[in-house]
Amino acid sequence: MDRLAGLPSVALDTESASFHRYVDRVYLVQLSAGQDTSLVDPLAVGDLRPLGKLLGHADTEVVFHDADYDLRVLDRDYALRARRVFDTRIAAQLAGEPAVGLGSLLEKHFHVKLDKRFQRADWSLRPLTPEMLRYAADDTRYLLQLRHLLAERLTQLGRLEWALEEFQHLEAVRWSAPKRDEDGAHLRLKGAKVLAPRNLAILERLHDWRDRTARALDRAPFRVVSNSVLIALARAAPSTRAAMSAVDGFPSSVLRRYGAEMLAVVAEALRIPDADLPRQKRTRRPPPDAQYDARLDRLKAVRNQRAADIDLDPGLVCPNGTLQAIARAIPQTPEALASVTELRNWQRTVLGVEPVLRAVVGSGT
Image (cartoon, rainbow, N blue to C red; front, top):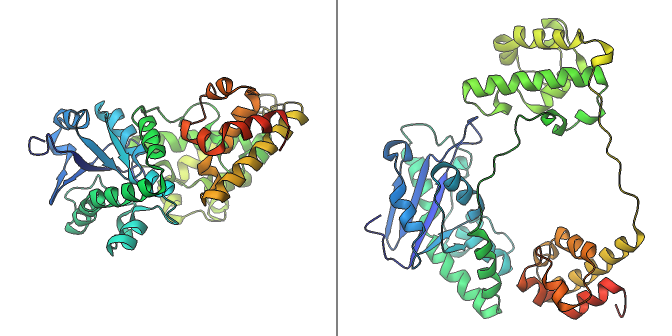
């Protein structure tokens, strides 16, 4: 950190293990500046406060690719926050790159090919293999070059200020805990909402069992039993090992290790009195609002035309959620439009204040 202090730009990336572990954390930090690339092992170092000083330095730009998750996990695990951010993924999007993944960009511009085998590697393992270390280093080794290339392209297009505004929003990103084991989490599984009450009770208890088991093993829940198998078990309601083994897609390894526990969970759900079975809560849809729908359609037409004019994806120029916020607010003056917090300044400029206000009121479109 002393060696990097005072440099104008530093590239940073992190590696986690959410694909493998129940409790995720930062397992590796990569840093590049000039010809120097360093890999930091948080398990060995423990105290990353010196990194926090670098991230918070007003004169040091920290370059990420797809910064959102890195910023969240650094905040979660170490309360570290970046003061000046440049995100090459956002820059690539605004520059009109057809593919914005880091691997695609490095291959296109620097003829560097990242090894896809390690995209979902278990970075909690120690020791890390030489191949994993090379892959991790390459994640930041070329990032500053990519940053300068994309910044030049954005400047030529007159879009650098757009990117800088997006980066400012990233600097405010903070960790928020995922809703993993609250009541009703099982209902988010594909196929859950069409289950009968008895089968839904089985799913609820199997889902709770899987979560407890995954937590005890520090393993990602889907690595204990997949979502699709949980749904299939809930539908089949097996009461014997033979019936459980016949469930489509049920792994024999899971049957050997957890079959007795899972059968006990199913049996418990089958004993629940009918009156106590869970029922699907049906949320009432709001009554249709033809005027709101018409406003939204007109706003989408304005957005889609402007996106075509500048050859960018419509969802990047202005996401549907932002258009919905405008349609709900019904702004009729430039000041009212500016108060729609979801709308970025650059998006307002690209769309045009007057076309948006005309679309809201339905005149001259």
